[in-house]
Amino acid sequence: MRKMLLAASLLLALPALATASDELSYTYVEGGWNRLILDAGNAGDFTSDGGYVRGSFAVTPQFHVIVGASRVSGSDHAGAAKVKTTVDAPYLGLGYHAPISESVDFTSEFAWNHRSAESDYRVGDERSRQTSRFNQVLGMVGVRGRFTDHLEGWLKGGYANGGDGQDARWYGVAGGQLNITDTWGVVLEGQFDKDASEYRAGVRASF
Image (tube, rainbow, N blue to C red; front, side, top):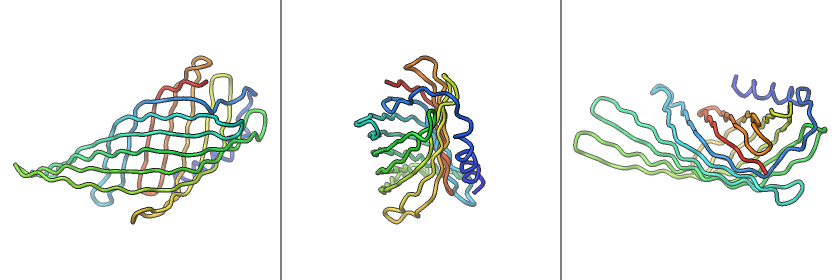
């Protein structure tokens, strides 16, 4: 809840912080490191690391298509029992953006997200595998703005349906980009809901 309140506060503050007037690009490709932290209740947090790729492609002046995929894996053990879990998550969405001011855009997104988790268990010489999959439909709204010629940021809030027995949930996204050149930049982003935190650090090429 505190993470969601922080994201909401930053969302309200972003328009006042943005000052530059350069147009934001909605055509880009990026990739990098991805970390997923799941709250497992009394069992503690489960952390997995991996990578992601993502692209956005403007198809009209105000609409863009988003595609992406990530893979993370992590291991845990209790006594002689060991488990390694790998999570794959392809993503496909349609985004809309419209200017609020010279430096801030309103953004919205409607997307499909599929997650598949494969867990390999090992106890001594015995091995087994368990697989789970579910689909989500999600929507979110937010703002994206440019603070300076080299720095921009975005904040979004959204809701995802449960999908295949999963709980529906609210979540928030906060991110920023440091532009090294007109094309290349470094991206940091975090996504938070009641049971999970996801972090990304990557390199983006904008066109």
